[in-house]
Length: 320
Image (cartoon, rainbow, N blue to C red):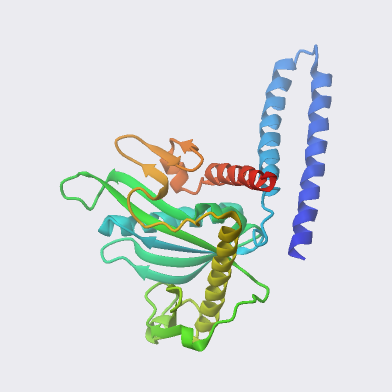
C-alpha cells in the first residue's frame, strides 16, 4: 500500500509538471510584443524556478529504488573525539536532522538519549517516520567533522571534533534473522532523556548486546520494559539484516564495506565555522558556504548529490 501511494503521488506530480510547462509556454506566446512583456518575463522566470525545484525533487525520488528506501529510518548519533566539544557537536547534529525532518513533514520519535556531561549529547537514537525517510538518510551514514573556535576552550583556540551517524531502515515486515538467546546480553537501566517522569522512576530502559558481532542497541522511549525490549529487538534484527546484506554484497563484488572510526581522516563531511564558513561533502565534493542554513536542516543538496553519485555507481556495477 505504501509503494502504491508513492507511485500515485509521483504520477500526480508528473501530471502537474506537464500542466505547468504548458501554462508557461502559453504565457510566453501571449506576452510576445505586449507592453507588459517585462512583467510577464519576471512571472515566467519565477514559475520556471519553481518548476525546476519540483522537477529536481521528482528526479531524486526516482533514485530511491532500494528494497528499504521507502521505510522509516532509525538514526544513531555518537560523540567521538573532542570531549565536551564533540558532545555539543552531537547535539547540534541532532537538531540539524530534526529540523530537516520537520521541513519534510516527517515525525521524529526519540528512542534513546544519553545527555553530555557538561553540554550536548553523548549519544542519541531516534526514528524518522515518513515515506522514503531511510532512502534519503542512508546518505548521512558516516563520521561528521566540526571545526570551530570552541566555546568550551578557555584559550579560544580552534578545535576539531567528531560525531558518528549510523542509519538503518525500520524494516516493517518479518525479517528472516534468527537470534539465539545465548548470543545476546540484556541489561536494564534508568532512562536519562526526555519522556516524562514515568520513564525516569524505573529501570525500564533496555540495552541489548549481540555478542557475536558486538552490535549494541538501546531503547528507553516506550512506557514499559517489555515494550522497550520489543523495540530494541526489532532494531537489532534490522542491524543484523543490513549487516548480512552488506556481507553478501561484499562477497559478490569483493569490496570491503565502510566501517569508520570516529576520528580524524574518516569523515564523510566537514563543517568549518572558523576561520571561514564552509560545509563540504568529501564523497561528492558538494559544498555550501552558508553553514547556518545547513545546521538549520538544509542538507538536501548533500543528500541529492550523494544519491545521484550512488545511482551512477550502481549503473557502473551493472555494466561490468
